[in-house]
Image (cartoon, rainbow, N blue to C red; front, side):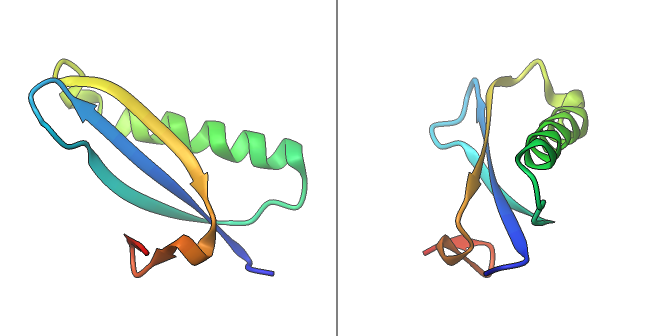
Length: 76
């Protein structure tokens, strides 16, 4: 079992055809409640990091992805 979990962050802007996509890696939580808190923390950090561009952003999508899907920061 992997000790890390990956989050896929997609940011849809008003002008772009393709969303901005990047990945975040975090240590795997041992409980479901901890995983929920971690997801909420990642969401809050992403929104805070991109706050200066909030007038240009249409939607944030943050989801967990399996480790075998992410290789070197890219979708396999």
